[in-house]
Amino acid sequence: MKKLQGKWAFVTGSSRGIGQQIAMGLASHGCNVIVHGRKEGNTNKTISLLKDYDIKIDAVYGELTNIEDIKRMIKEIKSKYHIDILYNNAGIQNKWKDIWDLTIDEWKDVFQINLFSMVQLNNAFIPDMKKKGYGRVINLSSGIKDIPQMAPYSASKAAVDKYTKDLAFELKDTNILVNALDPGWLRTDLGGEYAPNKVESVLPGALVPALLDDNGERGHIFSAQDYRN
Ligand SMILES: NC(=O)c1ccc[n+]([C@@H]2O[C@H](COP(=O)([O-])OP(=O)(O)OC[C@H]3O[C@@H](n4cnc5c(N)ncnc54)[C@H](OP(=O)(O)O)[C@@H]3O)[C@@H](O)[C@H]2O)c1
Image (cartoon, rainbow, N blue to C red; front, top):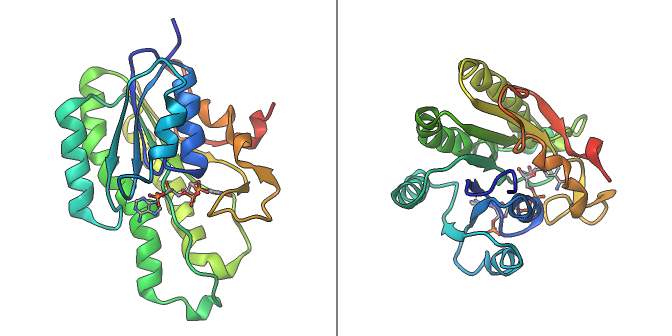
């Protein structure tokens, strides 16, 4: 039996890029997957790729900028499934601008998607994981540094790291292991064409925090590139 057989994972932002790789990686371990993108149709490619695996697949659609949309997706998922693995992958970057020209609205947009939507999803799903005595939560971080034009993005990821550690500590007496993942700089729509690593290189490292045994690491920032084949 495969390690994640029968479990359900929700992977935000799995219509393309890193999330699509994560969804396929989880599927290769027998995990059922709920994929997510902003609109129906965006996830077609991921769903067709997942059909190569012997798993159940579902999809939800919604804007992570919109609290009501997030509530609707949570309700829809909870009405059908128990989530064992929550992979908070979706994220955006701010526009490249001089640090002084980045507006507060631009800062807020980045924080809403990269941090606040993650908090909303964790608050919704982790209590159910506690009741069941099992959970793996992975929050997408970044190794970005010394790029002031990307300060909102970098600061949002630094906040993700701190939040991940606080959440992991809160859950220290449970079997809910909360960790972060730094995927490395990868060629995706977000990472751009000059990134040194192909998107596939996020595997198998991205799966390490999802495959942890009970009493595995918590509050750790895993670097996917450390596990490259
Ligand atoms: N690529 C890198 O080099 C790199 C490096 C460090 C960290 N990361 C992090 O890794 C994660 C994935 O990045 P990626 O490179 O795979 O990005 P990507 O290729 O741009 O994909 C972004 C994903 O997030 C979804 N998304 C974007 N805006 C959204 C919104 N407003 N509401 C809901 N969903 C939204 C997209 O859905 P749609 O397809 O429906 O738009 C898509 O599935 C992010 O958290 C990013 O910060 C990436």
